[in-house]
Amino acid sequence: MHRNRLRLAGVLAAVLVAVTAPATQAHDKEPTLADLAQRHGRYYGSATDNPELTDEPYKAVLGSEFDMITPGNGMKWYATEPEQGVFDFSQGDEIVNLARANHQRVRGHTLVWHSQLPDWLTSREWTASELRAVLKKHIQTEVRHYRGKIYAWDVVNEAFNEDGTYRETIFYKTLGPGYIADALRWAHQADPKAKLYLNDYNVEAIGPKSDAYYKLAKELKAQGVPLHGFGLQAHLALQYGYPASLEDNLRRFARLGLDTALTEVDVRMLLPATEEKLAQQADWYRDMTEACLAVRRCVGITLWDYTDKYSWIPAFFPGEGAALPWDEELRPKPAYFAIREALR
Image (tube, rainbow, N blue to C red; front, side, top):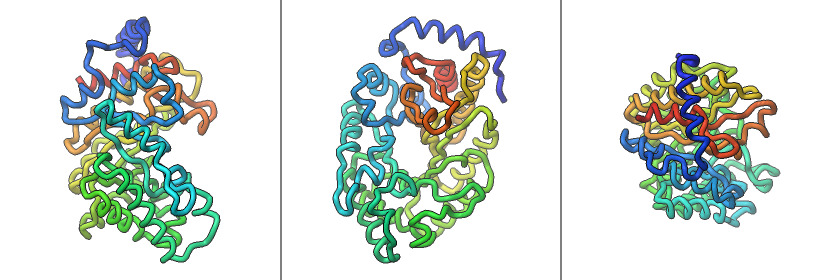
């Protein structure tokens, strides 16, 4: 699968050419990742977050290289409904407005998740009828606010454990598994044109967790629930091996009539980064891109922010990092050129 040594010399030569040019001016005359992806009927996107938008060189690459943007935090529950019934869409609006100014589309992230919930929601007990009303109001208020401005929503995020059992979230424990179908129906009522996704990590390979999503998706489709896609986050790590069954996995969800997308891509490594690790990382980015291109209903790829400068990895995985195709100086790494190679 990974052809490190054969490709290393050529990739490093390309990097040497790239790093001699300022990051914001690199590839002025070259097609962008988005341009190349569009030739295949796909998108190529990046997440971003509000504090980063004061960084003009960063913003220049964000605005030019990608055609899909995901707000990393600004649309999550803690940000959008900090007090019960009091909504604040300012962070999400800033990113949506930036995307629209750059002629980019937006993936909404995320309506229902067990993490980053406001204290008012998690610090008390709810009856099923109370929580159901709270959940419906939150979903519909947010989706209506962005109606017509969002290409797709990650409606329910990370609903399963690694063994394929339901995660014991506040929503599951109080409402049972039916909260997922309800969330999709409520989101669809609020914006019938938005694509609605389930989204999770460690589901890239075929295994217990992705099997649970496959079974659920099949049931939801049979019930006529508005589910349009399955998001595979693709937070990968070199030390754990590449998900070799990724393409087969994408294909089986496509056969259910679902779109798929790689939604939060990064490939972290144990630091320090070496030429060998960067070459292996480049192979993985190439292989993921090729897997998506091989399956017609894999509609696109989003990096979980494009640069190591703003990666979430070091804070959550001490001693790990260098996970993205641009380094902390906004210079393209071997992974960037491997993605381009795959898209060409």
